[in-house]
Image 1: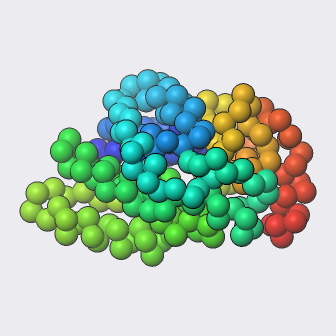
Image 2: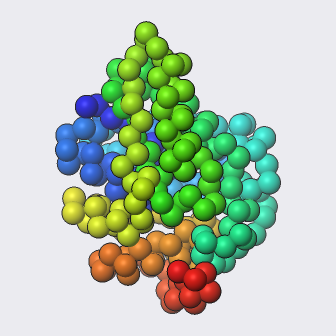
Length: 232
C-alpha cells in the first residue's frame, strides 16, 4: 500500500515515516509551511525524506496560516510552559489546521496514485486538539471517500490515534528512528526548551518507554514538575 505521510519533522511523524518505510509502504512525505514560529521543524522533515529516499514536498500555506490568527504557534503570543493536560495549552491551537492539511494531502495522494494518507495524531493530542480525535479522523475518512468517489480510493491511516506518545517512542525505536533528528519544541530555539507542552510530553514519553532520550533540553528536569502539576 503506497502511503503518503504528513510529516512535520517532529518525533511522531518522523517515527511514523520510519515505521511505514520499514514495511515498504512509504511513498512520499508532505509538509506544510503555515507560518509557524518553529518552522525549523521543516528542515528535519526534509532530512527524513532524504534519509528514507522518498520525495518530500513542502506546501506553502503561509497566506492561510496568517488568517488563522490567535495561536501561539503563529502569532506573537508567548508559548506557555507546562503539560498538555492544562487549559493554558489551548493557546497553541491553530483552528482547523489538521483538517486543512489532510484535505490537501488527500488531493496530492489522489493525484500521485497513492493508496493512503497517514497522519501521526495520537492519544495525547485529544485533550487540546479537536482535529486529532478519533471522532474527527473517522468522519474525515468518510468525507474524503465521498469527495473522491469514482476518482480515487484513498484511505486514512492513523495507527497512533488510540495510543500514547510513549508507544510512538517504542515503535520508532524498534525501526531505528533517529530521534535526535526530530524537532518538537514550540519555541524554536537552538535546543529544545524542555518547558513547553510538547517538550514536556516528549521527555515524559522517553521516560515511560524506558528508552534513552538523545534530545538536548535547555531545562531537562522541568518535565518532572510539570507532569506532577498536571496530575500525570
